[in-house]
Amino acid sequence: MKIHPTDLVYDQLPSIYKLLESTGFMWFVVVITIAIAVWVLNKLWYIHSIPKHLAKEKGLAQAKLIFWLCILGLFYKPLWVLAVLAIVTDWDKVQQWFKGAVS
Image (cartoon, rainbow, N blue to C red; front, side):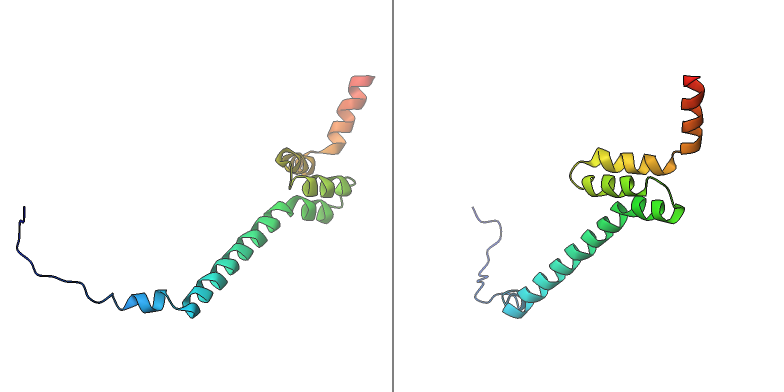
């Protein structure tokens, strides 16, 4: 069943197809994709290393512990959370609490 009689015949592709099939355009897409992936990984690494930098700035005694928790947190995320908690914890109050609990 024909609704409208038509004689349309597509004998040419749209003009954009030549660009999309060109080697230069595909390399452009590959380079842009890699650049975006590198940028995202760089930002993720920056966010991941924030606890390490904060521990170093504050001169915390547990800076090496926080560093290793950040590195191991790449593979097991709860360790990264522990590194963040180790920075925000007031260790002097924790020591006083332990000393008070023991006495």
